[in-house]
Length: 392
Image (cartoon, rainbow, N blue to C red; front, side, top):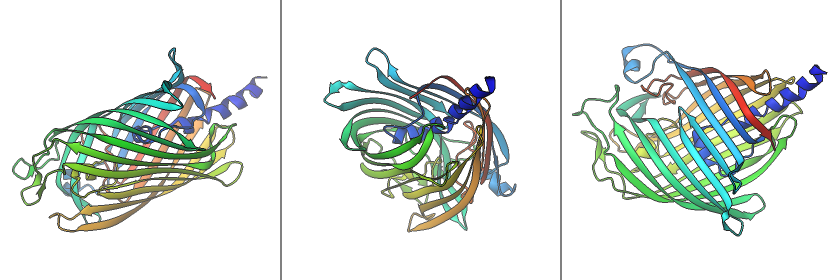
């Protein structure tokens, strides 16, 4: 009898791959499809980076062999409070997110959404590529905090439209990698505000046994119109710019699932964006490919081996359009990579999670929140604990 109960328990646990979240995914996605209507998920482990070489030039650019801790917490409740709205929260190395949505505040099928976004541990890399090496004009750290209110509704089957205002505060500080004051002038702290438009087409078929997407796609397109109060120029003594008074931006996210067999599914995960080259702060964020035009695409093949093991090898392509060292002209660079991600589901509440990733691009997310440390090779091993999980 116990063996018969264990199999469906492990099958339900496979839904962890659908509830694994990131800060940017929560900010960009509007109506996520997951296996659980409510869940509290804790993940903790060790994350590391390996650089291509240990010379002093690499160390001065933040490329080191290092291991750090990593953790994240995710909570979702689609029946929150007396109004039975949806509450979602996340905290991790990449940022902090809290959101509440309710379809009854205005009514008439309009969803009202309140969100708070924070990235307290951001690293900015104002630099240029030289023979595929990222050379710095100036590397520094910063943080930003944003409040957003959105109003959205379904236009037709699967198409969701949302628009709302936001207000964001930026702060910047020198880091151990920042050149001396006379060599690089940091941007000033400033505030920004504007409007954001979301268009999201969602046509996804879930695998009910495993709780993961099996077929279909989610395409999210985002446009921003932003004003700011920044006035001071920043950069090197030979290349300084000020932010434009008005900025227009566009970015997108695609999740595409193609069934290959009963136990295998192709996945295409893609993100990208574009904005004015004068919108320099957006171009030098270290958590994504650099430049005013960028893209990051993964082609993945998810295998379910038995009832408890999932492995997903993947290939990775990144594109960056960045300014040259003097700001005159630009370069276009492609970077190749690959890796694998795996889950071992031991019970419905406990899983092991591991991944390895290599990309030729030296601009990779820092593995530490204190220092800007990274490498072309990255790896992670951790445990996932799920509490109060309720299936849809």
